[in-house]
Image 1 (cartoon, rainbow, N blue to C red):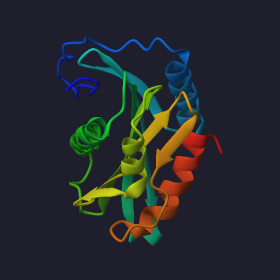
Image 2 (image 1 turned 180 degrees about the vertical axis):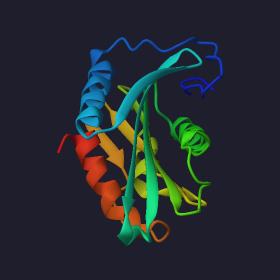
Image 3 (image 1 turned 90 degrees about the vertical axis):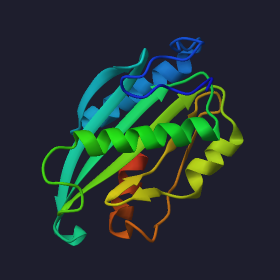
Image 4 (image 1 turned 60 degrees about the vertical axis):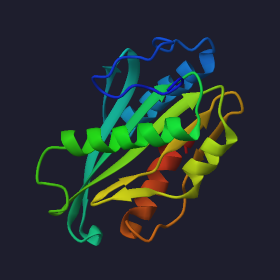
Length: 184
């Protein structure tokens, strides 16, 4: 699909790797990298099929989370255009990547995975923003709060509510989301 970032090990589509002509997506990713580092995340870059992807990772333990350790992955990439299928597919790829690479106990045994799958572009379908803001996506002991960054409008769309599944982590996700994506 055109505009879709490839997942780990995949090759880029017919349009080749995305090299954003606008400096805005690159600038946003640089600022995000600095905010993740400042929050104590381990930060690195990977090549996902020709697309440079920023990754940030941290793990936190809280008794109020029923003595659970949450592995939080922030995975961000600049793409030519963000549509609902693009962010939905990227969200699934990030959840699979985080679950596979978290280490430690199996997911569900006092261990959970949280993700911020983040796409940045200066061409964003408003439906993609609405999709990201509508709800948190959850699978067994794995949660995702997709983030759509419209660098042309300087707008960040992500869910900020308290979901039924994963409610105990809601304030944590909200706090990290504000810090990472809004610089607060």
